[in-house]
Figure 1 (cartoon, rainbow, N blue to C red):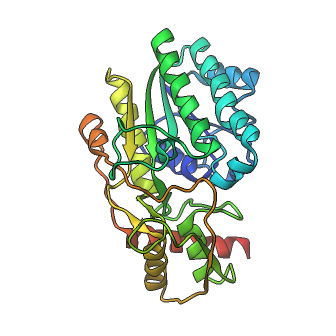
Figure 2 (cartoon, rainbow, N blue to C red):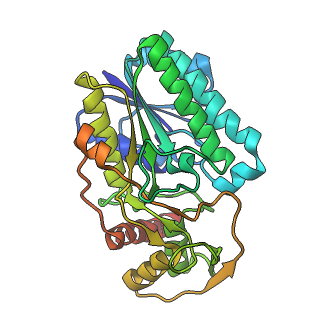
Length: 328
């Protein structure tokens, strides 16, 4: 009943591995360590270093470890980078995912949980957005994830690979026990950037765009604590193992915060003022996107526990302070 976690040395994946181990699962990680860290993986969990698109490697890992379920995090995730390097994103996010699915089918894997994104919606007409709303990705990143969703559904129909697609909204925060967190240098996540600035790790931060059709002119997002997101994966795995049907589910809290809201929260929680510059919009950024997550709550019994922007910021600050000590 081993669970293979791709990208398990990365930000969300490392939290997933800790949660699986705590739940008594047998876990193996596949990660190329391009943005992840071997020290972020829970002790005793084997690490296979390599690409998800390396079919010989993936096939060997599935066979040797008796993998029955795959949770697929490994991906490139920076929207502006995807605009500059679309072919790289389609290769890493779409082509490699297709290769992994083929290995899963041939290796007899029963369950596949896929990390998708709210970016598949683009700039939605409805707020909050439901899983049935139109899909109009505004970036190669969003398109690469949508293509993978389509492939996974078709594979499920043809080969019986049961799956859950989880469309993440803006993931932030860190493990409350501070065992792992967002550790990649040069990360672009808003809360990570703001926290680094508050702690003096950056001289200032930029706000990209102040002329969006939102209450204060800055982008509005639905921020979800990484621990709640990981719980959704555990709930999805339980759902599939219990014979539940394949599904596509939003993972967000259903409320939005603007960029300026987040910055003010970081300043308040950290007790530190810091310099903010205003810059032009970045390509590929929708104005406002907030989740409707009623389907996840109803179908897999997801019950978020950390729906508080101040809690998310507090945990992110705690991790950043620990990371500074580790890197000093």
